[in-house]
Image (tube, rainbow, N blue to C red; front, side, top):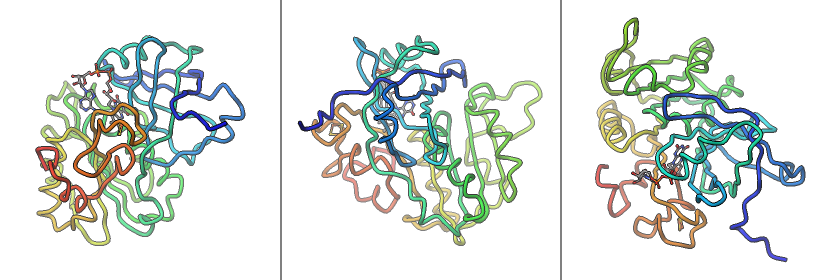
Amino acid sequence: MMKNEYIPFPAVIEDVRRETFDTKTFRVRFQDKEAAGAFKYKQGQFMEVSVFGKGEAPISITSSPSRKGFLEFTIRAAGSVTKSIHDLKKGDCLYLRGPYGNAFPFEELKGRNIYFIAGGIGLAPLRSLINMVFDNRKDFKHIKLLYGAKTPDELCFKGELETWKKIPDTEVWLTVDKPCDGWGCRVGVVTELWKDTHIHPDNAVAILCGPPIMMKFVIMKLAESGFKDKDIIMTLERYMKCGIGKCGHCNIGEKFICVDGPVFNYEQVKQLPHKEGVF
Ligand SMILES: Cc1cc2nc3c(=O)[nH]c(=O)nc-3n(C[C@H](O)[C@H](O)[C@H](O)COP(=O)(O)OP(=O)(O)OC[C@H]3O[C@@H](n4cnc5c(N)ncnc54)[C@H](O)[C@@H]3O)c2cc1C
Ligand code: FES
């Protein structure tokens, strides 16, 4: 019998970690051992995550394919589905279908300097690639993470930011719009971090994710710094329904973000007809 793409698999929630006031990370494991064994995904892919009776939402896989046996999703409570997911506890089930979409490059990044640039929950999709790069650290040159949030409380993955800072040949630069007492890093938007560290295009690739307005200004800064369009890689968000190129909810011109994306380089984004209104 043909496999029905729309039927989700149950996955048991093993752990729930609060990241910020409205964001939690869920660690899950497939209930069905056969499904778990057959399941493979790539850094940057997403899944349709559902709660029965509520609906489903596309969510990036934030765990890394290099760390086996579980999946993680970092989810902001934005509306009805994501709020229902936030009500779930350890031992409850999430329903998953996918993985969908293309992936961040990995082999092509080997031997290069990498700039990861993220705003807010935009660090979640990048984290899949970041930990995969760190799990193969010797294959990559210098790594810099530039990360901004509205307030220090709204930075995700605080524990991991500390761990990443200590990895050789790695820099982590943080900024917030509104500091709290004792905040020791920069205040301002992500592009302000250009004042703290040298951003150089030599043998480098920049990989970004964040709100469209942040991406617009980061791309302008990267272009000023000499980065070529093809060396600026980003992940795009659109309203999605099916996730598999059937319903037409996510298309921009001829491209379906769910199957042709969500990862694009800036050369490709410039060819999209609407350019998301900001690029
Ligand atoms: C490929 C992809 C990966 C994603 N990864 C994550 C992730 O890792 N973590 C996460 O928290 N969210 C992620 N999202 C966004 C997430 O899918 C939406 O926030 C979710 O669909 C909201 O569903 P809801 O029913 O809870 O809220 P809704 O009631 O549908 O919406 C709540 C609010 O969010 C807005 N909204 C909904 N979807 C989008 C969208 N795609 N773009 C902009 N605004 C939107 C609505 O206009 C509304 O204001 C991703 C989206 C895509 C397309
Ligand atoms: S979400 Fe249905 S075509 Fe992309």
